[in-house]
Image (cartoon, rainbow, N blue to C red; front, side, top):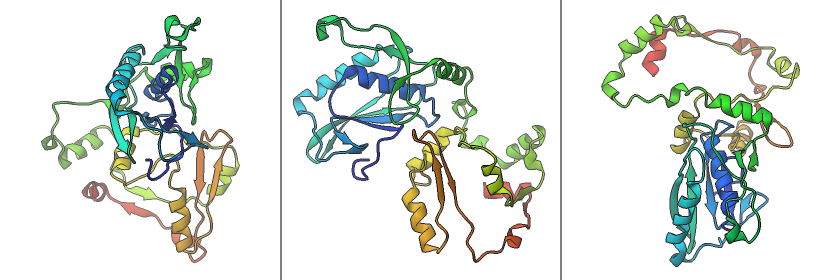
Length: 293
């Protein structure tokens, strides 16, 4: 993350110092995962400018490592419902950093106090109100009324990808079982799969403002990202530009808003192709699809 100088976004945050309130609010927001990106991570004791980490890092003295981990654990115990992130100490360029991996929570909506310091610690009155915290973009904020409704609805049901059968094994995953399930559920996969290019694609986008939908299976996407098979939230823009230039293709179009709450990418067809070539249907049978799986 530091070598690649990742820009701070809704899944990454750098903290220059140890402010319990700011840190717990961000952890709480990652647990709520209102954007559906499977949480995020914090790197503490790294200064950031314009969203990029400033190197070399500030770091933490080695004699304070145990104490800081204990404090993080104690402050996280004040989150309701209880949530503890994965805490790691990383040595980078001779400096010790605290790395917090905060996976999306599945127990319910998470909230934390506005001020976590006690009156004795801060020397002044503190706001002890419990708030729900979210990250709609690259900053942590309290959830407002409409966002609260969305947050509660999110935890009202458990996504299919989070329904785990601890008794299942690889022996249970068989082609015959998949075919039977597809037929019994009247899935559309029973019919031949048609892949078409819609001629009126640009007109459909021009008809109204289209926003990218939330990820249906964020944990699967996260798994692909970890093994370098995919990138998320339009982080591969430089790769797209490089490959299109190498192919002599037209430049793509990127659409977003000032808060970077969505990103739509349009890749234009190469002039060497004729539209008629794409009018043909690419048909594959169910057995062909399953054999690829």
